[in-house]
Length: 404
Image (tube, rainbow, N blue to C red; front, side, top):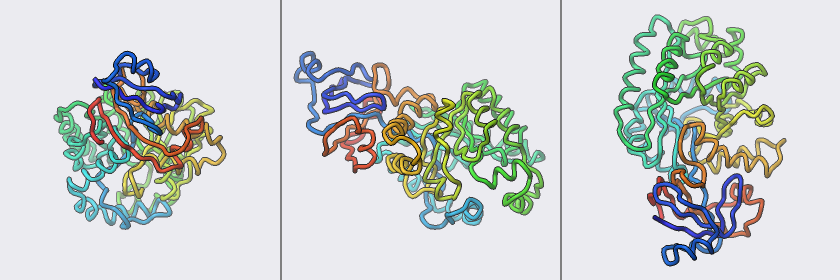
């Protein structure tokens, strides 16, 4: 058992001054420092002035297999970026061995990320994720829009899924990703979702990331048309957005991006109890616009933050991601948005991914960061934690000290 006494405990809902925390693998108690000193005496560790305890961060959406990218891919618009991914795919994948992907998981850990959702296209990142210190929700991705190839494509997906299910370690959760409405045939989606329901497996999918996707799904035209005709000999979208969402009606899902959804689709997401993953840096670099967080909040739709992968980001740092969102969403109240952003990488992300962490309260896993600030702590701490450099002194995952 460990007892840490801090200048403050920070959660999105509260700033508890002169409070401490008692924990082993799970949090046992949160109480004022003087009460803990009276009860535990010399067992207490005083963290000192400026010390802040907070939950470990949760990155809901990351791709590790393209972590070798630095300047290979084309930024600015979605279709030039996608074309550059296809042209450079083999080079980037071959350049990113297990050491490269382990470096990416370490980058996340150094930035306070104690759990993440990894979307795996090929299964090449399985070892790195299995060895990662963090909790990992490992989303095996299903892709393929050709019905004639359905059996082969599903067989490959099953092999990767079963391989991930053979990993036996605490905090590793084999899961399912459906790539997108334009890239997966409904036959494959139905089979995968049936398996997910029968086995209580988490599900994620990309949805309506770009205006090109919107035009293709609605009208079978636009920038996607030559792409699908040239690469896949396909003249019609595999699904409409409405048909795609209908397939997920009974399966609460984490949908990533959702920038170009219309009113009916937003309502369907609400009715399906789905979650939206917001990746502001990726959205800006690929020229896709910004998610309308105000609309989501007005409809009480849960949204969380993710970094996406290094194919469309320059770092895997949720502090940076939240700061960028803070400035992109200029029409929202600054303090309220800051607070929501912190929820999006702690309590809400944990709930969406089905993890018992992200909340500093008894019975939750002790996934904690000990940080230190060099400025007065006040009610605007949610803003200042994003604007000022933050020093992470210690990291705990399930009560085990990982750093510091």
